[in-house]
Image (cartoon, helix red, strand yellow):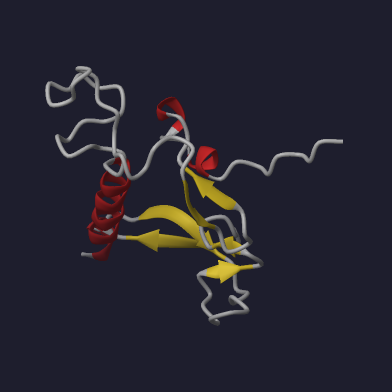
Length: 125
């Protein structure tokens, strides 16, 4: 029964396609998650996929012993995990469609999507 199926609004779509690829998933240099116009409803399977992706992203800073930066780690000579050596705090790991840097934030801010794309620093006067 269609009424029994739960749906969740997780994002909104903007009808303007990306100038590079023509995809409606991007608009005006912003991802469709940022470009709000039309609600998008997803079912349980899509919500489960999005949750799995969130878990994957949250695991990116784990070291080979499965420990986040700052966790107790008997495999680290210091006893404290340094996290993923490939993704240290401050590492540049990519760029957004509009060219903003994607940088690994401090551990305390890794759950905040905005912390991964800090505003550009003002040039010294």
